[in-house]
Amino acid sequence: MKKLLILFIFLCATQFALAEKVDRSNEQMSQTLITKAKSANDRAKKLKNEWRGTGKLIKKAKNFHKKKNNTKSIELATEALNQANMAIQQHNKQKNSYHYFE
Image (cartoon, rainbow, N blue to C red):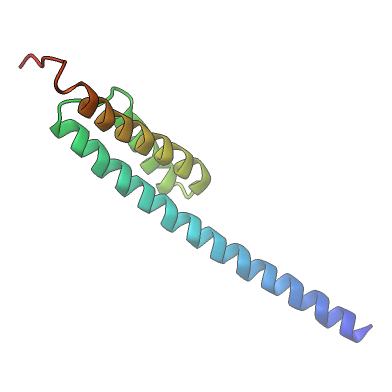
């Protein structure tokens, strides 16, 4: 019985430690994705092909990151990064056939 109690306490303690480690990992991933999305969107801005909602998604992801809601922040930052990359790809495909009016 004593061994079982010690094993139970050990499992509970490791569970809390692992949960904290995963939370820190999600926080780092969230920050990394936000940074990548911001830099990709800046490249799209330089190409004058920024998509309308990408900046809003990055802003929302930053707000969720500040509120420690890392799963929502990761979701929004991933979507923003995807949109920024697609905007760059769109520019590269259409740069010879599309005339930019400045």
